[in-house]
Image (cartoon, rainbow, N blue to C red; front, side, top):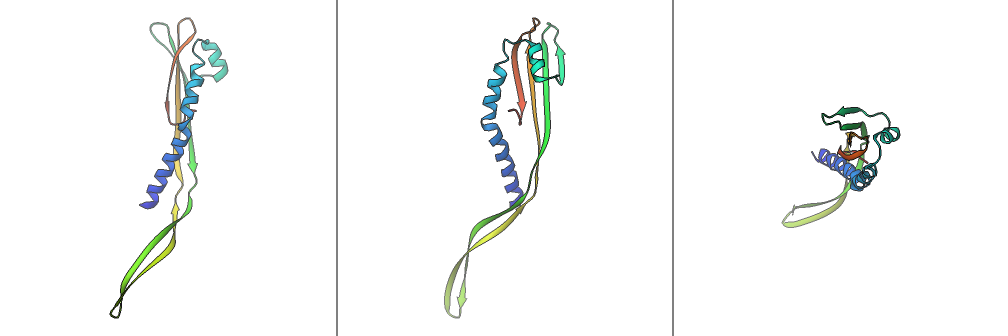
Length: 137
């Protein structure tokens, strides 16, 4: 149980570390496309995963990125304090020992994705964007 908890915490911290500054920078990058042409966007980002044409003539250009990553498991050593007490004859005693507990944790497998969509006006200009996912950077 302790090993799974540690692995889950490590995975969450890994994801948060990647997102901490990443989303701000990613938003800034996307914002630079407002006012640019959809053609320039495609020339820069490559062929989109999907393109939708809305009934009013606007287009949604969608980019999807998915990947899997493994965080290698390992061993950590946790300092622990253990206290033992009892009686030796009529005399009570307490002994405190300082030990190191060896904890092994398994590999953590992550599925990472980023879906980014740009809205292009019927005149061909990028007018909006949105994204979702745990790997947008």
